[in-house]
Length: 402
Image (tube, rainbow, N blue to C red; front, side, top):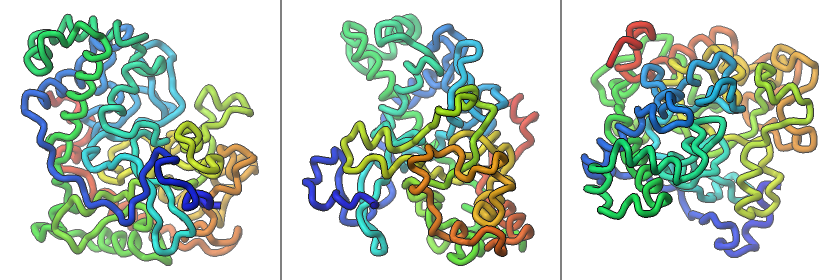
């Protein structure tokens, strides 16, 4: 099971390093203001898609804490072409400066090293620049055919700036121009603008604000290993005044077996499954890559309350439903798996990978859930304290902001 063969192999054979301890939070970036400014312009530029009209901000909408799905109402993103719908929910791109590259780490209670880090739901990008490049060429997103096509668009709008930053010959090779654009996008995504740390929770740990009674109850449930147990994956440290110690993710992966989103067109094919991390594991030649089928990245919960949809497939459209699923997946599976088939969005051959051991998944069907309905409400109340100040206004008023 859990990467049993890894320790017998040279670390280099996995293409992913094995760390003796968890890495510290990333330090502040040293990107130049000019590079950040260029990246910001590129992020909001609707001329960079094919056909034109879709920017990075189209899916990563500022008014929704840089998440959202470009107007799609089925839980996954709409691309630049009509009906070009993907199969995954758009994650927020805030706080990405703290996401490390892929690595393995063996905790004290783990049988073998397990993977952490990387970008996208399946960890397929190892760096922020690599992540920024993906949507530019994905036919279901911004749909550029190749670097030559994208470089032509960059040359039309950014020749002076890019030559100043990267040299006069930057457009001689389209691949180099594309790489430069992704470096600029990564610089913007690492910037202070994208790491605001001004939520009510941040004020609380800094000692400049208080949480309400229900929010404090939710905080205690979040930490309680016998109740919510949320902090086992959504790591944070409320004893530290440094908000970078409270990212509300361990940057790891888990197989929680969310219900199948039947609004996704591909899911009409009963043989189609999004298997998650195992495709990346296979490409990187990790030992026994199939053990990671059904695993997806644990997202940060910062600004979770302003998202349009939840989970990697966008199956839930309310935060309360997402929390309630964790609470009662094991005890009331019929509430979630409407066809009567448990774990229906995990390939049948890999349903043994699903996490059934951690609290609250370790309860028997029909038994009392670890969390009551009022506990779920308190958890939701706490999660709302993670919303940064600029996203607490009603969505309609935020849409009018520049």
